[in-house]
Image 1 (tube, rainbow, N blue to C red):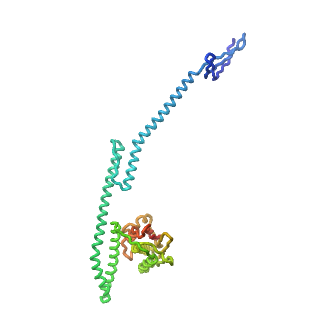
Image 2: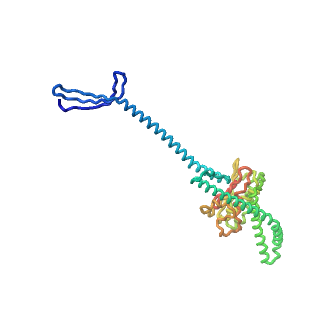
Image 3: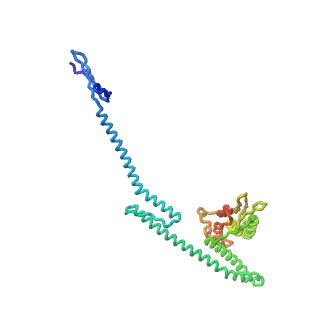
Length: 359
């Protein structure tokens, strides 16, 4: 017999003749060369059913362990969310409540961890914010009450001074030039003082919520013409021609004519003051449902960021600028707060150098 042999193996199915069952197995074969008897083939069969069962058990165990691990991670994530994310959401909802004006909202403090410290700090901030807001509201209420009381108390002495000033102004031709000039200055300053007092009274009525509308059918063409006529002397002094463009047929609307006239006069005076001597255009338009009045100047306009404060009380674009009318800084504020229409109200005007409108 020689030593040379050829070996090989293959995975196959092995059938048990006794039981009739079959299963996976490994077949290993080799050929043997014999000098006397020739070539022999030798085969060994190894059943692998037990190993396959073991692998199936391992796979099942790994799948179950993986599923259990996923469920465990989900439970941990839910716990972390409840312990960390949920308090943050509560803080966000509480902040939204404070923004909406519900100043009594607070976060619940649990434990002594970092989240509890955060809740305590947030509640302290809310307490201080509430205290400051209440204090500011009280100061604002006192201020509004003071302005209202002073404005009303000044009416009586102003009426007396006005009567005396009117008498002096009517007889100024009989006075010496210096005294006559003083009477004219007194009359002009009283007009300014009365305008300031009227503005303060109007603002106090808005603050107290005591403004009562008196709408009535009004031809807005007549109202616009009256406003332009009253501002004509100022426009001439400033060198700003006023052009009025409206329909020929009547434009009638249910409005509080006194307040609409006040809005338009304030807007037009503001346009003249900032018109830089250029043309000012007043337009009146209407359709079947609405009426609009626009006042447009061609002045210097506003600096970036000033549009947000142009309707604030007593605000002026340039306090150092010479003002021919001695404005109070209340005109645009009154115009923005006054509502002269019965349904949609009146839209506040645009900043100087742009289009202002009253609807």
